[in-house]
Image (cartoon, rainbow, N blue to C red; front, side, top):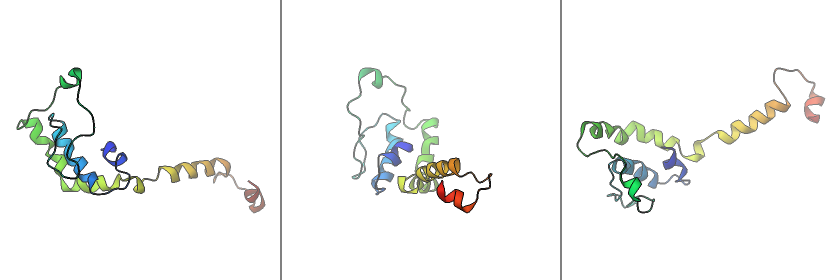
Amino acid sequence: MYWVAASTPDGNGDMFAKWLSVANHIQNVHDHDSQLFPKCLHGPLDEPERKKKWLKPSTEVCEKMDIITDKMLQNDVKQLWPVHQTLHVEGFHSVVIHFAPKSTHVSYRTMISR
């Protein structure tokens, strides 16, 4: 899920095509029906990677992976778009709190000088 958001910095419709491609990828299908994301971005898989345990289509486990196509989860994928992230703001506020803690009273002049 993180890869989908991080690899689509402009948040276009390509993000949903990438998300839906996960269902194919876990079944060792790397070419997709979508025009926006027709195939996986990785190169050819080497022999050790080919021998991974992939999900087999139409099995019970694979049927449970239909959560990937759930509309509510797809709406959550939109929220992962980097524009919606608050990491940088939280980092800034953490630095501000370090130099001007709210638990310590300081005068206006002291705060300005800090």
